[in-house]
Length: 178
Image 1 (cartoon, rainbow, N blue to C red):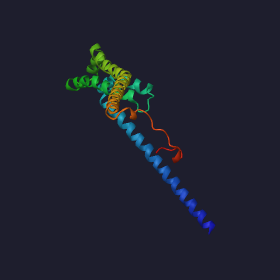
Image 2: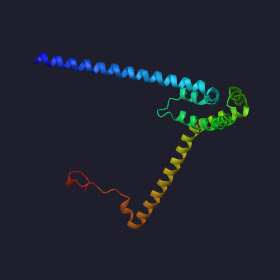
Image 3: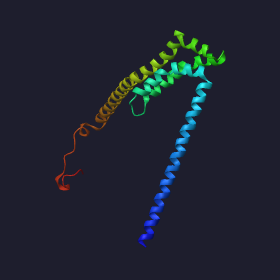
Image 4: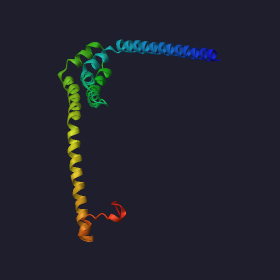
C-alpha cells in the first residue's frame, strides 16, 4: 500500500514539473512574440519612435529614480510628459510622416520646452502637493478643534461646570466606572 502511494506521489510530482515546464515555455514564447512585435512596430513607425524616445526621456528618468511604493513620481511625470509630447506627434502624423520631419520637430527648442516643461511641472506637482495637502489638513484639524471647543463651551454654559470635572471613582464597585 505504501509503495502504491509513493508511486502516485511521484506521478503527481512529475505531472506538476511537466506542467511548469510547459507554462515556462509558453511564457518564453509570449515574451519573444511581444518583443518581435514591438521591434517591428518601432521600425514601421520610426519617426514616431524617434519623437517619443526624445520626448519621453523625463518619464524614463523618473521611472529609474522613483522608489515610492505606488510609483507616484513616475505617474505624475508620465502623465504631463505625454501631454507635452502628443501635440508634436499630431503634427508629425498630420504632415509628412518621415524621419526628416521627426528630426525637425526634435531639433525645435519650442518642442523641447513644451515636452520637458510639462514633465518638469509633473516633478513640481510630485514635490509640492504633499506639503500643500499637509498644510490644508493641519488647518482643517485646527478648525475642527476650535469648533469642538466652542461646542464644549456651549455645553458647559448650558449644563454647568459639573461637566468639566471628572466623576470620582466609587470604591463599592471595585474601582471601575459607574
